Image (cartoon, rainbow, N blue to C red; front, side):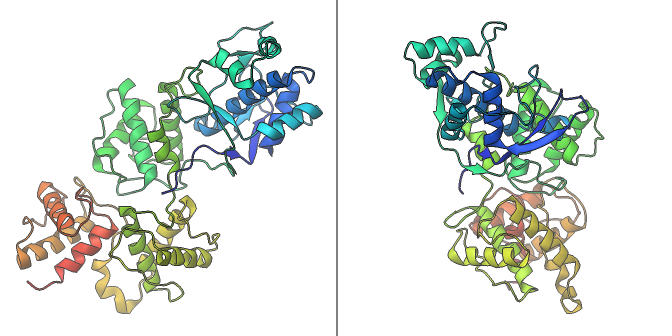
Length: 450
């Protein structure tokens, strides 16, 4: 999987007032925004290295706000304000100084990070005359530049020796982290792993929230309990379902306990960032998720002759997988890149569920064999668990190669042991969770004669 670090957004939405003030929002190109801020905050006759240091601080400050969804996580529909008490100066239709504009063009996709962290540094700064702060002194940066300090040396003087610069970050459209649909029991994906990571960190400060021990990408009963307790504590309807409001409340509290928008933040580690940004599947990737991808693509293709079939045995993203993904993307009006990004995953899930609901009559007799579309895990109950246990019972009766189960409709310890036994013998990860690949294998084994 290709790891995507924080990117430079193509645009930024600025609120022309304090956060709660009724004021206009304007969306401008990010590069233009930085030119505006720099021309509002600093003087064009300053030494070039002082200007560069200040511009890098301004870029990092804005990126920290965007990366952490500071304002969206509080329910606002903008990225940053133009109010100095909260953010940095921005003047609508402001004029740019030519030399400052050129410097911004050179460095706009560079930003500051603290060692061992990934998020752009919350590069707090002040003028150094009228106001003093823990971060960069704008007038002080002029003195350091006149002493021959480089931009990085100036920044280290104020922010510490444990910082560095990220150079030439890619410029892409900024995407909000909420996947666009409710996350609930049986959901699966990196967004669930993000959720678990954030809830577990929050629980250090709010110990009433139970720890989630299962680290996989599935939304389990254990996850649901933690979500419900979070919702109770923060006055949300305790449904256990993570809708947009719950997602961003979790994000906001997570940011708060880790002090993300703080000069001396606990920070986002590379491991956490991999969860947040490592959401794409691409040619050459080797992952258990590929088996699920192949199953979903094949199921849709079975009822859609425009799409090709795939080999369900492997876990590698092959050229055939890429061709199938491109065919799906073209059919569903998505740019045919062959890369499974968040939008493609969402479309696949929707297409799978729609296909399930429109099974032709001649195939209805096989309906019980179709994957239910959610990950089944310990503690769940209902008709899907009954179907699973019936298949497991058939396998046990025919081969006696797995622990016996009782058809109770509750995913209990015995059911989990049986699932793990099948996963081990089928070269699948023995986590006891029933995803599409495990479901397919269980159904196939249930048909094998003893």
